Structure formats: structure tokens, C-alpha cells
Image 1: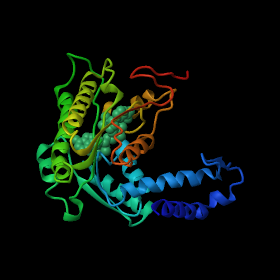
Image 2 (image 1 turned 180 degrees about the horizontal axis):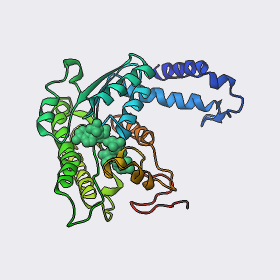
Image 3 (image 1 turned 30 degrees about the vertical axis):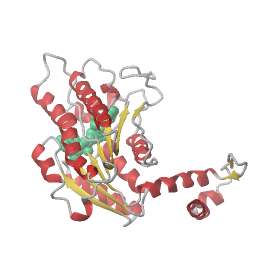
Length: 315
Ligand SMILES: NC(=O)c1ccc[n+]([C@@H]2O[C@H](COP(=O)([O-])OP(=O)(O)OC[C@H]3O[C@@H](n4cnc5c(N)ncnc54)[C@H](OP(=O)(O)O)[C@@H]3O)[C@@H](O)[C@H]2O)c1
């Protein structure tokens, strides 16, 4: 019966889509049962199963004012536009409000968006985060621990202690404190608890490189924390997920070079980096799996990349 409902919805979507009717170049695909169907039909059937699983959820994204976090917020909204609550956090509240307005404009009122100013490197702010949420946003189902940054390319013994502290306090302590703030909500649920924690790590956490010792150490710490947590929660339905991007073009390098855009642009010269949307699709895919499926660990590169420093550059 459910299957029938999904199919009719998909057909309705398919027929509503102008490109499915008027695009003469689109080719039909053959299903395993031998039926010829339009590719959009397949895509929308998958999307509706995922949309259903995400429906009604409350999702927190840290670092949602830019890059991967902003894309993740939008991708959740696009995937499940009928009934979703998004809590978007970062230090730049005006930018978060802008993201919220863009989401509303794109998907309408089915997605409620709450922008919240939150500096994850400040333990007091994290302590007040859940208690100060409006009642209807308190039942969090998914936490995307995305806020993070790199500062500089200095090598020991020349690394500024301010940079060391900012990277550890944000990438490690901030992520751990957010996790500790949200886990009690998950643990109150049946079967020992349910909910998703999705940590954004990095290739840097697997493969340390010169000029990135502190950033690499923070992401290795994220990896250890994530793996321990998954093992600690095995008797529950709480899913602990790590997604490790390779090179993604966001504000990341601008922040690394203290606002120097020309130095940041040089990082991407001759290569084709991933976009925030590429990572966002994987985050939403992981959250949208059947409850018994855990996408525990994922490494995502653009096609020119094979490691932290292994890049093919066009001259
Ligand atoms: N770009 C890459 O190549 C790459 C590769 C691997 C992993 N990553 C990881 O991906 C994550 C997202 O980075 P991105 O590439 O999307 O960079 P980005 O465009 O600079 O975005 C970083 C986000 O983190 C937020 N943030 C930074 N410090 C914060 C703090 N103390 N409290 C709250 N929010 C804070 C920023 O918001 P505010 O400034 O408004 O606070 C911003 O929204 C990071 O964890 C990063 O380490 C990136």
C-alpha cells in the first residue's frame, strides 16, 4: 500500500515536471523489471523515500552561515520540503537570517528555520543552547557538527598560540560540547536512544601534512572521538557518522589566510575543487538512510585529488 502511494506520488511529480514531457533529448532508462522509465522518475522515487524518512525531523547544523553548512541546510530543506525544522547556528546571525530567507523563498513554509547565534568555541553559549530553544524546536533528531576552521600555515615552533587555541576550541572542544549538549535528548528515546550525529572531519585527520599540524591534529581528534562514541552507543539506535571531505572551495581558505582572497584563490588554481553542495548531498544521504543503516565513515575527493597533498594541477 505504502509502495503504491510512493509510486503514485512519483508519477504525479514526474508528470508535473515540464522537462520530463518537453525535453526531447532525455533518454529513457530500463528498470530491473524491464520497464522503460524516465530518469527523473527514478530520481524522484528515491527522493520521496528519503523525504519520508526525514519528514518531521528537527535538525541542527553548526556553521550554517557559509560553505558546507549552508549547503547542508538548503539540501535538507530541498529533500524534505513538507515538514522539517532546521536550527541553523553560527556566529554571524545576519548571514544565518539571510540563509533562512533563501530557504523560505525556495521551498516555502513547510520548512521552519530557526537561526541561532552560537559560538561553539564558547562552552557557556553551548550550555545555554538547548535550554533557550523554543519548546517546538527542542526534540532534536539530527546534529550536524560542521563548524570548523583552519588558521595559517605556520610550522612549529612558529605557530601562534591564539591560532592553536581557536582551532582546538572550535574544531574539537566545540564539537564535543555540542555532542554532549544534544546526546541527552537522543538518549531519552526508546531502545537506548535514537538520533544522528554527523561529524564533518577531513582528509587532514587521516593524512597529516606540513603547514597544517594543528588543523590536522584537530581533525584526527574528531576522528578518534567519533569512533569511540560509535562504539559507546552500540546498544542504542543513535547513529554516529563521519564525513571527511577532501578539497572543497568555500570560505575555508580565505579564513586560513586571514582574509587574503588572492592567497585563497591560489589554492584552487589549476584544479576543480568540490563544492559545498557536493558534501551536503552526502550528509543528507547519510541522514536519510533506513534507521538500521549507518554510513559510518566516508572520504570524498574531487577527481583530481588522491590524498591531502596528492593533486593533479593543470598548468
Ligand atoms: N573546505 C574544505 O576544503 C574542507 C575540507 C575538509 C573539511 N572541511 C571542514 O568542513 C567544515 C566546514 O567548513 P567550510 O569549508 O564550509 O568553511 P567555511 O565556508 O569557512 O564555513 C565554516 C563555518 O563554520 C562556522 N564557524 C567557524 N567558527 C565558528 C565558531 N567558533 N562557532 C560557530 N561557528 C563557527 C562559520 O560561521 P561564522 O563565521 O558565522 O561563525 C562558517 O559557517 C569545517 O569543519 C572544515 O574543517 C573543509
